[in-house]
Length: 81
Image (cartoon, rainbow, N blue to C red; front, side):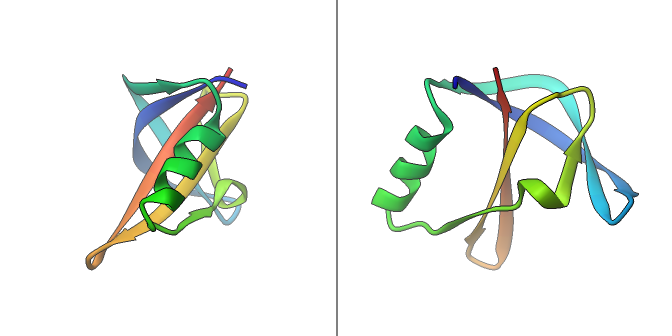
């Protein structure tokens, strides 16, 4: 299942889930989300799947991962096509 990285902004909470709105900009394309996850794990960067904690407006299928970088938390959102 091909995946495209999305740039999103937070728009608050709905039913205990964070609503993320795509900004229209798309990032890198991956033949499968697992390719990105494997690259992160090979670089010894642990990632956590938080897809069930968020909603992405206008996207039917998505996957969201969270990673720690220094003191910051980075979220990476993918549109699954």
